[in-house]
Length: 198
Image (cartoon, rainbow, N blue to C red; front, side, top):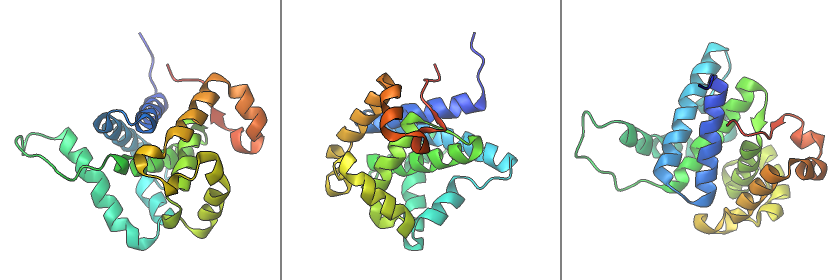
């Protein structure tokens, strides 16, 4: 028997979703896991009086991108979890890269709710910022520009070609957390959870 907490559940879901995305493996499962984590985190954030996923994204994304972002993200998730009203429906606009936005928001909310984040979340957030500098605020874009060389400029590549360096960094940190701590220092890694949930 295993004792689970909401924190463990949300972290396991986000960490697994991140690995699936970076490996380009099973985008439907990745999307469902990410949104399940966001649902848990949103409820916890609300209970604690913290702004959750959507409010945080509104702060970090230019207003002209918000409606497109909401519609793109929720469509695939709602389709995957409901069949009672539309059992024969199909969708032809599912975009595997859209889950990266959901994961990014989930990572932000996790960090706000728990005051920490996992190694997977840190690597993913850095990669996401480098991948999408055009939608970030000026402050966030400056950080992304400094990190981009380490991620091999993912904004200049097709999605399928943009994740290899992030996956390599992720796996190195999982295998050798001490090496990453020495390389990046306490400013980056002071509140990072390296140990896996299970």
